[in-house]
Image (tube, rainbow, N blue to C red; front, side, top):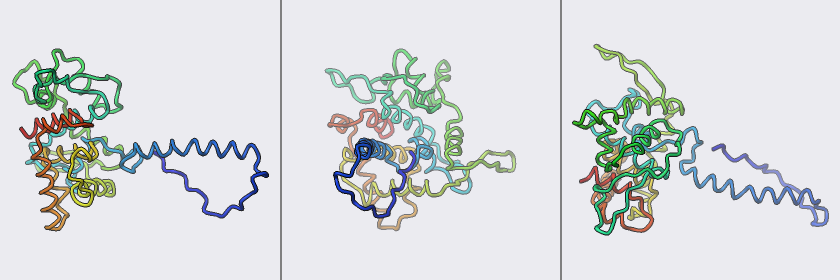
Length: 293
């Protein structure tokens, strides 16, 4: 979103009411009508960035996992692949594209309920639209746990291998390059060359890290339902992807211990109970259940 234009700071001589023309009054009414719209735009832009630098959950998790100078994630991280697929399900649910089937009279558990397509309207993100297409066209529907495995390619059924979303990290990194967050380089690793994506806009990553830190320190509310759903999902999925530690690494020991203590409090919550509370997102808690069961 483009930033609001700066208003002139000069003093304007106040005119008597009688001297104000009808045109002046119409202009004032027009400005008053426009102000709420500007405010509404600001409410939706929770990151404070322009649309070009607003990141999806998948991009935020990947950015936390990428090494700034090297431009790749740890070779030992085998959790981020499934974590990114969990991000996709939550992102689609937050955008009103997916939902869980009704729990029914017998109160099905979160992990037993099927994922349903609520809307097939394009999201504008190729990866999200690809995942949405798979989910919409699959009958009978699958559960959250199954979709995380299918989209990751972790299935023994050769007939379901086509569900795998390929080169997800590379495609997300290219999105971040287009948004001016990363750049692209070639790096030689003795036996092979690898495309890497070093950090080029440190401000965006620092804002992301600060946002995560503040959520469990200065802005801690001790109630997940009072937290922003997207931020809550980011903390859960960053932990499941084994990259949350990177956000807390710069903290001093006392802050680090407190941050990890509060993260553990979130991880100890019972997803089934939390999903039944008012103003909750069932898909978020179903994905959390899939990773913490």
